[in-house]
Image 1 (cartoon, rainbow, N blue to C red):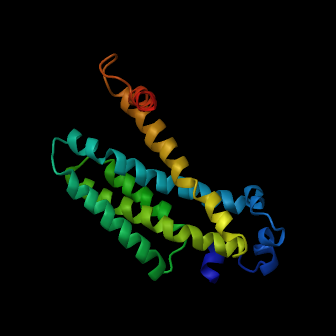
Image 2 (cartoon, rainbow, N blue to C red):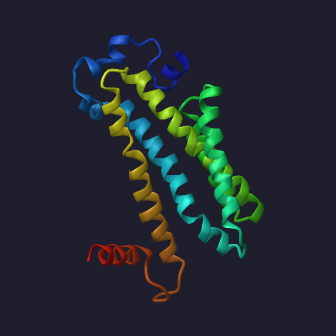
Length: 199
């Protein structure tokens, strides 16, 4: 629709321009297209944030001296489901998932027991909405020819976000908050576990 084209910066652009990836017959064209990287970076940020919270919500709950991790996993799941359904029903644009995710991080930064519930829920909403809106925005910008290949390229976003935020950033933050020599680095532990599994 026109709203999706507006968010992609293509309102008024000829249909030929919006589908020139398909006209060239090569999905690799998107790697030289600025709009693709904007969508990709948004998805890396929002999806990576969601994966980071999913992977570390247990540690967050323990750090607050509480129990019942399952409740917060449910909050993330409910938020993700509503985000996926609501993004289509409300015809949201790609600008909303990062706004929702940023608001969720501000809530989580309060380190409050009650804020954790809302933070998990809204992180799930942004996480789920980004999965719904990503293919819609790609179709609006590049058309439907070679769409499967283009979507496949963009679906590296969750993996990149997981590596950058959940593995690298979360491990770095964890390491600088423990006593020197107090515990094994999470990154080192992951490497040792992987090598042990391969042997």
